[in-house]
Length: 392
Image 1 (cartoon, rainbow, N blue to C red):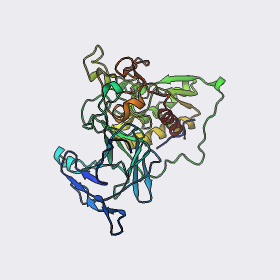
Image 2: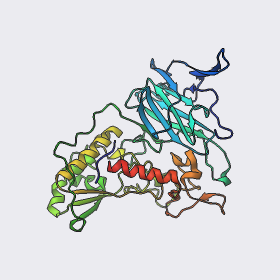
Image 3: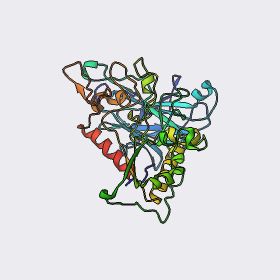
Image 4: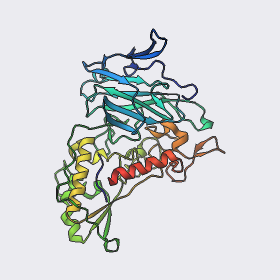
């Protein structure tokens, strides 16, 4: 998905392999039992995913890499949470249908802290899942002490910080469809074809003529003359490269193209609740491209592919691509009006800077409600992994 851009105390989980449908009846997929020799053996059971004929098998998995990855037995899911007492993997198939039908095609798997946890990494391997298009997230529970900096709420399905694709709303600025983002993945598609003659412009910094711009705003208006399906999209941007060359531009600095929440002002009463955040400074995830910049509401897979097409076309035209990155805060706002999608619910005390003199309230050095705790080694590594992902 990358593009080339220049056990704890009180640990929950119960039996290994405790699975359930979203908000429904639990069924045991695998359990630990005592053998004749008195040793503990794992009995792995096969079960069909609720609402489907899809057999799934679960095993302990591994702690690295974080996010979802392919392993020898299927797909490995790994997530960090130092202070969680329990973590549940939520998996959902993306089939269309009624709300009830969609809820049937889902399963939740409660991780066992004895078998699905290494250090502060919770992990599980799932065999039998499709290798593209499945939605996933996590329920995370832990201490409820606000004054200790915790904000756990197991009622919320949380986005994996290391998700490389994010599924949610597909159309920019429209408060319709699913609002809570899910991670998704694509191990089916062939690697993007950069072309045998592809190369970076590698222009000297002293020669750069930089145009700071917003992908969507560049072509969103009808005056762009583009087909409505590509206005405000990565593909629409490509059509206007000749205009940039006419201006003498040889580098574009793109306002954030990470997945962000353009509806943040509309989530609670405030003087800007009539506005949409088009700039992109409200990051939901630091690895996934902005889904709603895909053409014609194409979704996360299209967004990833079309962003690479845009970068490839710009580089072919001799134009450098610079990304405006935002690692000082996220979309989750402040303690007064939180919008919990990921970091806050996974491990607030690790991911954010808190004020120990004020009931562990979020510190707001960013002016946007929260401040990412980039001095913490786990957060620092996330930032570095994100930079490697986008440059790689």
